[in-house]
Image 1 (cartoon, each protein chain N blue to C red):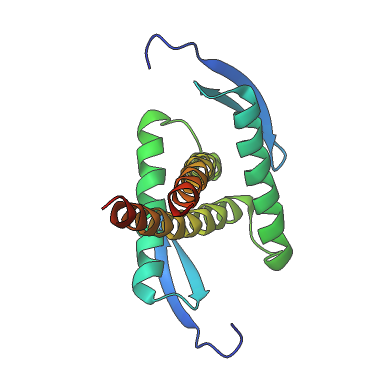
Image 2 (image 1 turned 90 degrees about the vertical axis):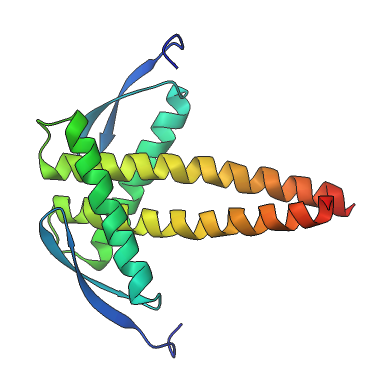
Length: 86
Length: 86
């Protein structure tokens, strides 16, 4: 990745500015930031007393849960493909 | 999900206690919590000056990025399966 050009943008998540740096497109980085912002606001609706740090931790918790479920799905699909290719 | 029994546990993430409630197994919930804890500590190594709130937001950002990549992979695998099944 060292010789790939890096994109740098500033995004706003839950009222705070963050600098994002990466080889992904700025569009992808903005999408990720807006998803995190949305998720934090959604969790706040159900937990209005939580401070922003705990809200962010619960956002990470929910996302890791989704990630594990999706990893299971990838494994199942790969298994099915393997059988079909036989 | 209303008639499914819910599990309730207390987990520790980055030095704070969180109550988790869900229909998932307590093992799954503990795994999710430990992944978030690990990710926060890993991000702190590279960003020692960040406060815990920003660390948690960056953890959520990284996880959402992984989630989007995995969703692309699921779509590709489903497309491949569809072609093979004709």
